[in-house]
Image (cartoon, rainbow, N blue to C red; front, side, top):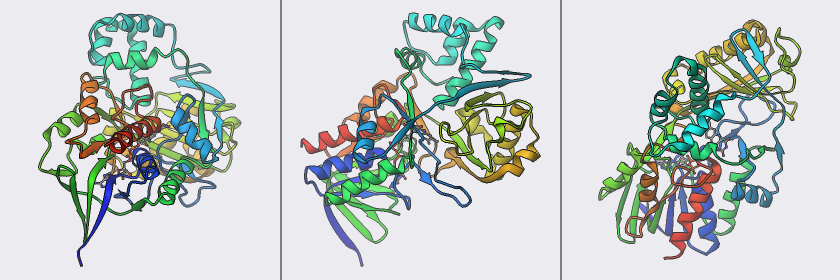
Length: 426
Ligand SMILES: Cc1cc2nc3c(=O)[nH]c(=O)nc-3n(C[C@H](O)[C@H](O)[C@H](O)COP(=O)(O)OP(=O)(O)OC[C@H]3O[C@@H](n4cnc5c(N)ncnc54)[C@H](O)[C@@H]3O)c2cc1C
């Protein structure tokens, strides 16, 4: 039997932005329904405990940036503890291993040129214009790896001016990990929503939104939901497909979403019987925090100061997009990458392996990638998505944000809070 339920606001997506917006809107006594396509909340925050692991792992977001005010405030309210990251950063290149940070003195030369840039261009164009000579090959290689790994961005698309802004920040704040993972934050938010009378429904994949001014209708299976306002928090990668159809259509939204970059990531968590990398390989990695390599899975980190023998492998950007391998094949590549970088037989690494999990965000049906990055023209597109459509349809999410925490949970929370404020003011 067809059932119609009525709400003040329907929120699509139970990730950071959707849940935080729901918590704000229910606080001011609006009737809120959150529709989530998956069988879990959290979205790209994904704390999970696959078989064989001794404790939960983070399949998605993991680090908390020390100057992220909303995130830190929520963790405090949720009584969640967080631990500052420590340890040594190693670089394993060809036959060398160095205990140092990513960049050398050329970095400062490049920053000076970036600061002089008068108009925006894709970062690859900046590099080839100013550092295209053979002398700067190492700089080009290192900086490309960094942008692909950290920003998950394609250097032929990412905005040079956006990178300049990001890299010009005075100091790198401390980074933290949450004890018990990001689940502490999203479970807390979901509790708040429910305590305030909001409803969160899982397994509700929205494919169409029928709307007119102050009237939204969404049908999922046998249920029809109606509301005055709708906040859409699905990733922009899905918005631009578009994976949700609007009736009537709104082409400006799809256009704007297409002007925001979105990168892929493959992340793998490997738990071992002991931290063999400290003592056993030819190359030893004492108190390893980060390991940067030239291997297929280039970036690795441990859990220090936590003693848990877990290594996390990471590849971001176009490299992740190109992989197209099964989880098992990626595990093999991961182990071989560690073996090459550590000069330690892959067979022995396998003997220490207790549990593994690969998360291929590039292929994830509900995000189609990992997180956004700025292209030339993205700021204007973000402004379009920050506007409502006839005070009825609103958009939020990590990509619809113009502050210093782009691509992060903090960006998603900020964007959700902004949208909630605008809805509550109507
Ligand atoms: C591998 C990885 C590592 C990361 N590391 C960090 C980190 O260390 N620190 C950090 O701060 N950030 C990190 N991030 C980024 C961070 O996770 C995201 O920026 C943030 O979680 C995005 O939140 P959101 O609410 O905007 O989107 P999402 O979390 O994507 O929420 C959107 C929700 O919409 C749902 N949805 C999609 N389509 C539909 C539909 N049709 N109907 C109903 N629901 C739908 C999705 O299932 C999802 O739950 C990482 C992300 C990834 C993928």
